[in-house]
Length: 148
Image (cartoon, rainbow, N blue to C red; front, side):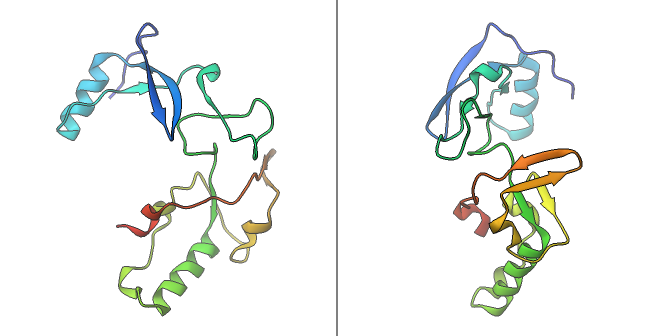
């Protein structure tokens, strides 16, 4: 469903992982559609202005680097071989009935194939086509990856 342009005059401050963030509300039709779909009243908003974005933790960022509504970084990279290694460990352990885990449980933006398991732990840069990414830190995974 297309949602009309947001109302720049309706801004709300919300908290995203303890950080205050200003969000611009969409037209009421977007909120109504999601409310009906979810069976409860919700409001659709978005982060439109880079000046409103949250700064990345300065321990891992360069000055001026920001993140929008993601957890702590703009991208999360994971690997197919590392997932296969995790699933192999699950199959061998006491929790075999809980596996295998699907890739979407880790919510990656980028999935890399063709390198040995855990290779990403030592990466400092990642080149995809002509775009270079700086690898800031390993991701701390929350317990939600273990819940179906």
